[in-house]
Image 1: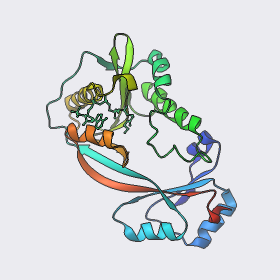
Image 2: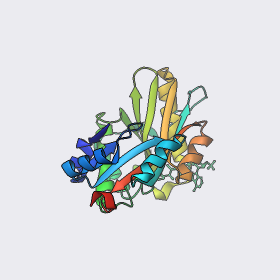
Image 3: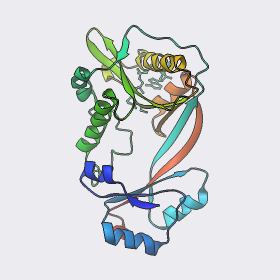
Image 4: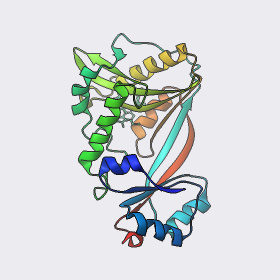
Length: 239
Ligand SMILES: CC(C)(COP(=O)(O)OP(=O)(O)OC[C@H]1O[C@@H](n2cnc3c(N)ncnc32)[C@H](O)[C@@H]1OP(=O)(O)O)[C@@H](O)C(=O)NCCC(=O)NCCS
């Protein structure tokens, strides 16, 4: 399917299209879509092993934008809850709001200033956190509180009875490498294990080796690799 992403377009104030793998329209159809909708960007996510589709995207002008690595765990380990971790309340948003500045700079929303403004990318993650505290996007947000300061957070989405995914995890730069993300992960995994959830997923960027190390160190295994491709508005085809 080739479609407009309504939420993303409204959020970024520019038209964002999506070409959904494995749909492979010919260049005529893509041109028609572009002429009708004038997107600033069309994105496509495809599995790394579909080389034919990758070549198809490259031939029609898409460029590699990001590598998405998904990890999984069956939650069969032994996890520990922490006295420093609790569910976030809406009053915590003020602390989280400032922590969100450039925290996820490795993500695919940064580096495409002509489409996703840096400030808008920051705002996207703030919105994500705020809506997750309210249970409107991810199911909840946990925070690590140290001496009345929020040092880190994690958002978790429970998908049905047996599956869950981690949306965002972050530690304030002043508290890195102290085991805070590990503690947040453990607390979240213990909560999920109690609920008999059997599958937990998390995705990160190919260039985010710190996050990859964090997940591997906590018993996750790699599940899949996909590639984000962008056709951006300065490409010949969108002019
Ligand atoms: C990724 C992040 C959450 C890790 O937070 P943290 O509290 O510093 O992590 P921990 O102290 O619990 O470290 C756990 C493991 O992560 C890995 N890790 C942490 N910092 C690392 C670094 N600088 N280099 C390499 N690996 C690192 C290690 O495997 C570490 O285990 P070890 O200490 O036994 O070696 C933090 O760096 C962060 O907020 N980054 C920006 C946001 C982000 O990228 N989030 C993930 C998006 S999916």
